[in-house]
Image (cartoon, rainbow, N blue to C red; front, side):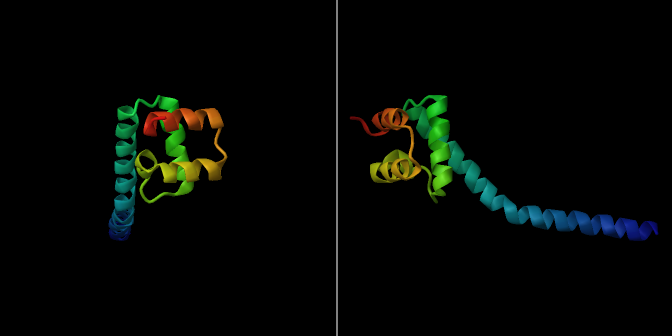
Length: 100
């Protein structure tokens, strides 16, 4: 009985590790994207609330590369338009990212 419990525990541990291992690359990518986002937000002088709003915008759009919102005005404008963002907030963030 104890051998069976030990075997089940080992199989559960191995199975859990294998399952977690498959999830790690996606989670690592998302965390790296968030770190890049936070760095770009700080470099562009975005407030915490503006940065959070922009991250939510990128997440809702399911962009492969959320950082494109910082460097491609056409991507930013398309996402703002499609999500019906608050005009004042969207305009303030756009000025900080792309100038006038």
